[in-house]
Length: 173
Image (cartoon, rainbow, N blue to C red; front, side, top):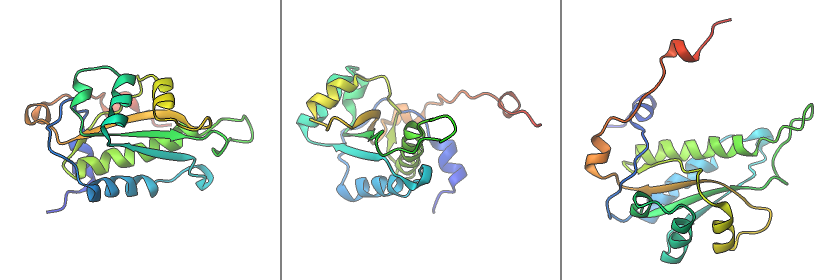
């Protein structure tokens, strides 16, 4: 039975422990397709996604965020963007690169959840380590790392979602 979007959104949570079950290429392709279809400002699509699956690439990513839990992921997707390709709002120059990448990454996060996998947004990594270690071009800015794997059953069953109420985050005007 297919899950509704509401069910996927409610199920999604940050998972920080994964099993050693491998992830096949077809599954990864589905995750990337969800990002490819994401909207971006003026449809500029200023992003590039690096699928870090080789042991060498995974080690570079792990070096950029040295946490024990992070090492349990089967692969990592590094979301990068090019500020030369991103749209800037004419009235004040606001660059929409981070917004565009966030939308695409959240599409991936929801697809990852739908597929029975898990992830956790990671922005607290050293971008210079991944830039140098993965030999990214000078114009590529590393924005988000997604560790991906099948969730450890204990971690997956925990309820770690603490959210403000609707009343706390809205104001009707």
